[in-house]
Amino acid sequence: MAGDEGAGHDKPVPRYNATLRVEMESKSLVQAAQAITNRNVGNLVAAMAAGSAQVGDISMSHLRTAEAKVLARALAETSGLVVLHAQFCSISDKVLAILARGALQSRSLEVLDLHGNRVTPRGARALVAAIHTAASHGSLGSLVDITLTKCRGISKALAGEVTSALAGASATAAAATAAAARLRDQVEAGMRLRLAREAAAGVCDTASTTTTTSSTPSRPLGSLSHDERQQLVDDEIAAASLTAVETRAQAVPARAYSRFAANIDCLEFVDCAKREVNTKQMRAVRRRKYGLSDGRSTKPRIRTKLHPVATAHADAELLDSGVFDDAEIGILSQLEAYALDVLVDDAAYQMCGRARMMPGATRTVLCLHGFGASCNYATWARLAPDIAAAGRNMIFADLPGFGRSSGRDIQTGTWRRHAPQLVKALVNAFGITSGVSFVGFCGGAATAFRAVVAYPRLFAGEFHLAHNSVIAAVPADLGATLAASGSRLVVTWAEDEDHTHGCVAYKAFAKLRKARDPTIILVDIADSHLPAYGAWTSSTELTRGTHSSFVFAPSSTLRALLRHLLAGHMPTSLLRSLPQP
Image 1: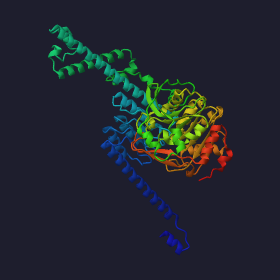
Image 2: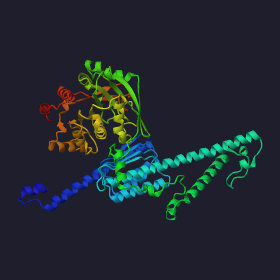
Image 3: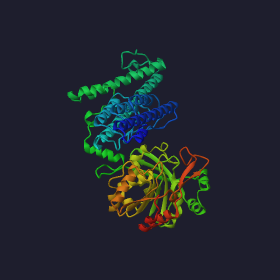
Image 4: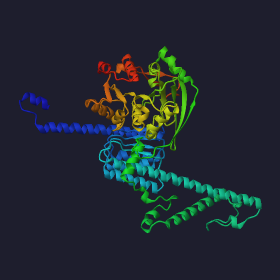
């Protein structure tokens, strides 16, 4: 109506009408966002109650206190959910505290992803206090990671303090559980020994059968019922725990005794001073979490065992799916299936895939897939003839959580901190210590970036190819590492619904392109140059819950680009000839 009035009279539309219209539109948008949030939270809570949800995603939601309370109650009372993504949710300190309380009490949740939220220093310190409180009361659940990357309002040091507090609390809880199990085993072993002595003597030895407490009568153990024996075990455990606490309390300074007495139920005492982590230590913990080496932290210990495995019916179906031509099938049928057992410190993994070692070859191409449910070693399989023509070894891998490898379905948060070590272990298992080029897609490319920064000598002097490389934060020293090691990186990008031009990685690479960085080159390509197909198999053995394997079909132009990179030179004219989308 405002437009009609303006057309009939030559008067401009009053400004307050325009402002009111904007306010009304904003109000409707907020209401629509709130309705979507209610639906998302309701669906997730229903799925958790039914036990059918392992990964929950409420990202981009407008979480309020009421929805946070419902979700926190569901986290504390149900089990089954392993990862909860709550990225860019505009949460307040109160909502953060409610979510953290439910996550810390959950019996199954391992990762709480708060990437991109605004977290104030006060909210972060409250989160640390909640972690310590849960640990002191013995109510800490299975949570092992709270992701606070790209969170506005807090420093990296404060985010590292949250990570350190959670790691320390988890270690304390594990130690207390182990100590309680050892103590119970000792008491039960002592009771079995007394029973054996009674059976051998055939008489009641009062000295050996009296209990350590006055609440239980002095009777032979053989005459006690099962419930009375269990009560006797519990009484002796409580007495032994109290004696241990009193013994340790004598060595605690008087000013710290009050804090120590508050944790009197804990079997293992942790010095409160050890919880105070300085800034340097927090930074080191943060860098180790993402596999980055600062030159001062202790390198993780890596142990591997490589063994061949038999191919399955699903592999034959993959080759007969109609996606591969005869030349590709001929090369792929020569690949050998493998399984690699990797132990990084105390974390165990198994990675599977296919590989081919060329006689006399000293250079290798490592192909890494993306992080979708249908991704596995076959994503880059159609490049096998080009790699073989270049005379290079080739390794196609199933990363943890994908394909036949170990790990929860497509859950990268459980192994991301060891990603560089897993890549190094994989190539080293085949006797390869240098001359490695990588071809990576999406999260596989991000994994390769971290490995290049952590182990530059492994990838030195080579050209690498990445496509739609989504990563939370591109390593700041990636370009410098590539330049120092004489390597080059070509990043191709075709926009789709999962990999937009607005993501963090694209912005970082576009900035380097604008600065004319010769080390990292970003090229926008059309979808026709790298279409993807689904190779269907009757079983889900090769994937996680889907019958189709995600396979790229590079065009002749991209194959030529790969051949130039494997030959060791940058095809500038070919890159310029690629038609932009």
